[in-house]
Image (cartoon, rainbow, N blue to C red; front, side, top):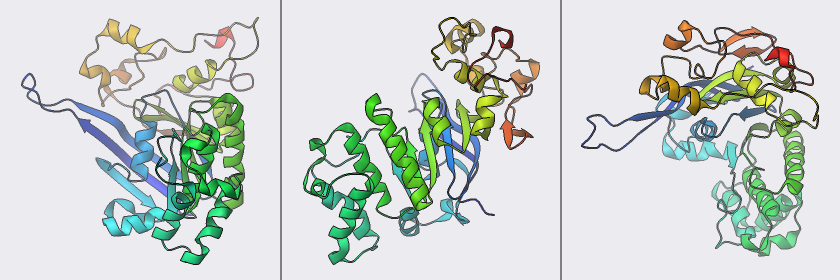
Length: 343
């Protein structure tokens, strides 16, 4: 079966301005040759530390920013070959929920016209049916019909995120990209938004690409997990397999860093800070080189091969793929705790 979303070797580079001190402006490769697939009605979580390229990758997948190189297909159509008018029509089928609900909503528009605008632009309802559609969208996210007459500043953060989700659903998309939708919210309302996404995903049969930091949320929400580090996906696996047996040292470090209420249990340090070891080795362009493993300064199993060659995602069994020359099956208790002997 053809995947709903298929990305091959996606690259996104940013170039600094020229300077009289440099002949060539430096290049930052925010996304470095990423391969990704997402099936219909599937939830894929994209995790990694801040600055790893998760949001940039998501925006490339939706062509909110243009990839520097690569191939991108949605439902079999080549998105990178579409003209602006065709892309605008196709964009109805994939929508994004942004991280900050306050800055993503127009403060000058009432909620009703805001939700009606994408429906009207894509001609999904007649003018007479727009009020009913707005009321339906508000009901789907748990807001009363009276909310259509209010402005964004009159709502709490959690309610604004519900409005953002309703706006994304207005075009009846096949794919929903949620870019850390709960990170800017109070802890008390995060579970409500996550449960709302789960309910909507099942009710509408949506494919969901969820970007987040909270591994507890990811474990509850996702079918598969892809872990990014410095613009590359270093491990991809079904959620239970990744939490139980991480094969790459970076996902292992992320799981080991999750706090657990076990005061008497010894746990290994999650990861050595990049600055310390990189500073000892020399923070040069080679350290960020594309022809080597980006994780090698932190990795306890790094070898000479890691210095000169970048590992590619390769299958290691049971739908599990890892980008490591020395993968090991590391079993954890409950997927997140490791004994001192495992360190």
